Length: 496
Ligand code: AHR
Image (cartoon, rainbow, N blue to C red; front, side, top):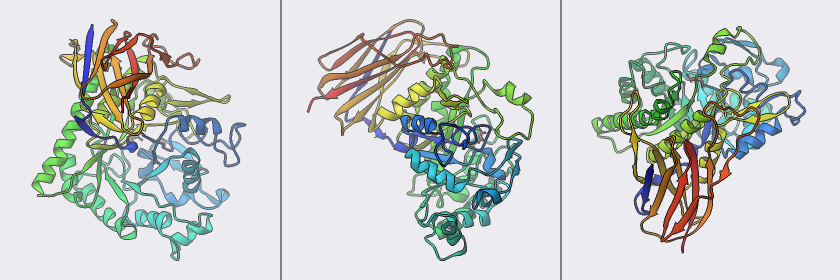
């Protein structure tokens, strides 16, 4: 099998926004409690923050943390989560039918973000609540002082405002499972009015309006159009969510779903631009893909979990090797859309459909941790247009699927080109990268992630990234063997 990637430093998609390496943390299952927060755990500091988790989060180079949900936010009273811990109410979390103790709240979250080197991306509740709760929350967080809510923040220990820049206007408001589900027109009006008052409190914020929760929604497309009709001038980003599964146990069809992902993103870009044209606007709405991942392994167990527990085991997918390949392919697809996708949150981060898992002893890293970690570390700079040739295959739902998925990133500071390449086939692939307008002086690093059974998971921590020794450089052409079903990365130096 053969595959070739040709790149040209002057043929650029866009600078990659560092916020595409973000994640969601929701009050859901063991995502917060028992995940990042557990005052009784020997690995926790005085705040109750698990230091083994903090280290793993740092290793992932995460930028924004979307919080506190997800579906959870649509029934959440943010005021419950501030003030002395012993005075905070325990509530029913109706989204996940669990008990919420509010022992980890707004101030704890802010402290945790500074410990992990991440930044907040805060969602307001537009399900059970609305304008009033949102304006009070932003006053509490971002107003310097001298008013009721900002002085209460000070009294609760935060002298300086949190200065939260990015805010989500609700979550998945198109879904009938959502607390306070709305029609597109109802939501559009509410989002417009909420955005207006939030900007009156702090004009410098960025706002994300909720798009479709999945491509399969009957309202997909028309939801975005109506919502943007109401909010085009008020918001900066439109959200989209996408999860894939291999419920049918068909590897090649599963990996081909990156084509669906690509079309999904392009479709939403087209809707945004159609509204722009209709409104004769000069403003471009970019995308916040603020939930994406593989998700399905835990569905059955979740259906059987008894309700009203504290931190139950929910959405605890144990990811296998084929899931890691799918996540790798989704990451390459994201980079292909770097011109319009400016925020992307892996959903989620700890224990809940997550790359990092905790147990009483410590943490373990899931298969999907590895491609995400490499792309978030080295996929910084400018995404280059991938001109690619490859053998192809047909799967159940997709025709002419390239076995090769590849893209190169130019890091001008480091004078480095980083190539990400995935071989979706079961044969080795002769892979060549040609850099057309620059001299490659050296191969800095060549790695591969391969050789595992596609159903192998990583509870025993056997998985790791290995060196790829089958790579050579000649006349700025990089030639390598991509192992069957493999995720690969090549870093090369550009001559001055
Ligand atoms: O990430 C899990 C859930 O998936 C989120 O709470 C919701 O927004 C989405 O449906």
